[in-house]
Amino acid sequence: MALHLTDLMVSHFRSHRVARFALDQRPVALFGPNGAGKTNILEAVSLLSPGRGLRRASAQDMTRRPEALGWKITAQVMSLGQHQEVETWSQEGAARQVRINGKTAAQTALGRVSRVLWLIPSMDRLWIEGAEGRRRFLDRMTLSFEPGHADATLAYEKAMRERNRLLKNMVREPSWYQALELQMAQAGVVVDQNRRMALRQLAAAQSDATTAFPAAELELIHNDAPLPDGETALRDAFADSRSRDLAAGRTLVGPHRADLIGTYRAKGVAARDCSTGEQKALLVSLILANARALAQDSGAAPLLLLDEVAAHLDADRRAALYDEITALGAQAWMTGTEKSLFDTLGDGAQYFEITETDGASTVQDG
Image 1: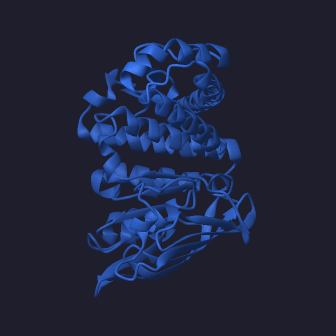
Image 2: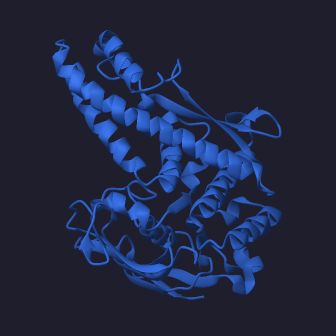
Image 3: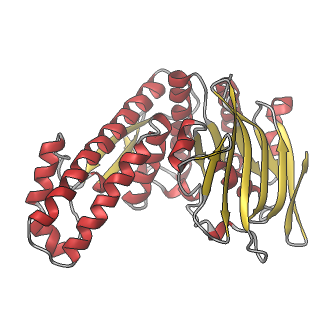
């Protein structure tokens, strides 16, 4: 049975005092005026996966004002044929907590229960802005295939922060660096291997599919030189780079310097040089390819969060997107200002109208 939510309750989250959704497996269309609170619901669903959600906001920023009591999200998730209860919450701005089936869990455990992909308007500039956003995009896709990627990334970043602290303090004694560089090399190799595995999965999913959206060739590059191959070579690279890193006050080699380069396959044009519409179509294509690869790998498509995606596609592409979502069997959560944007879905979707009254969002069946 496909991954989907059967019940979602959101409490004191952003603009919502309380919002509840009783759901089945079909896609979910949220419609209403701008600023009514539609994206806030998508953000709540995104927190059923590891990390800071689709806005990358702090727990404190997500609490409803002026009460600032804290927030809570509770979901019944049908995952791998089993019902799982997921709760995540924050009290008075504290770091968010997670419970799965009544037991306290680490955030990383969410990746084994619900796999969530999203496409939001702020990602439209992915190909023309800095490498950090593209790394984050790649790591979200990688995490969907390998939940343990979060642990490897955290281990690498923790060790690198300690190394950077030594560099900024101009510590030159090698013994202070060796253990940290070993940890970085061990975790860094795993991070790089996971990313390359994800790119292979995406390439296969795009090659095997007939789709209305253009395929993207993806390449992982590392600064001005290839990433050293293997744990020993990477550890040696950290050691060899210490003098240069001391001058810079930070680590200049490693998987944290990676960049994702995209090319419109049919045209042979770099994604950064494509039109705005083509860049958007390439992003949609990658999200769909990610979902197809997961469906093939695990037997269930992930939850898809598509914020205002309908408004940025023409009618034919919109219909093609809905057809692909339906074929995948994915519970896609989509937002739009008008219900008519989803007309071609007909009874194949669930509809909810989101409005705002007296400073609070309200939800009703649409």
